[in-house]
Length: 209
Image 1 (tube, rainbow, N blue to C red):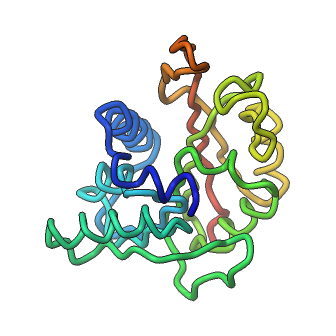
Image 2 (cartoon, helix red, strand yellow):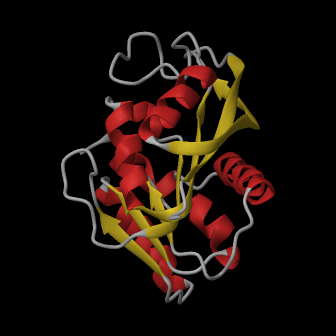
């Protein structure tokens, strides 16, 4: 059982809901969202970001690899009788791409958990319809304090320029990176906290000519 499976039942704290709502506002400020847009969230967890965006989007597929998170997400979808949100167990690092293509792909605080950044951004590019949008919200480059310096299986945030250059090399254009949220996060057992910046990168797949 993963850490995320264990934490799923207690994941939706006021702080995490506030973070998701602020990032949703940031996405909405950068992209003209529409109920005609088919959406895909990767690393959806309990769906906080998609629930904050759903009224402005069309059907949403929410993918995660944690069964615990997916169980909570599915229960939320059923309890609210939502017909156009679908939870799926999908690991894009090893599983085939789904057949569907989307007008917007978004992910929140997931990229730093994925070892091969270039591979996953390329998968996102392939999932998009021509002219579709990618939105990535994640940590700015940090010293390892966020997860603890002994944790070595995550990226310690991202350098904005390097991430932008990588997205451009894959084929994305109209790349913009801005600060979406200031996160106060506990950094040790003594309860000390620090502020971490969460950026939002938006990018677009070239439209067909």
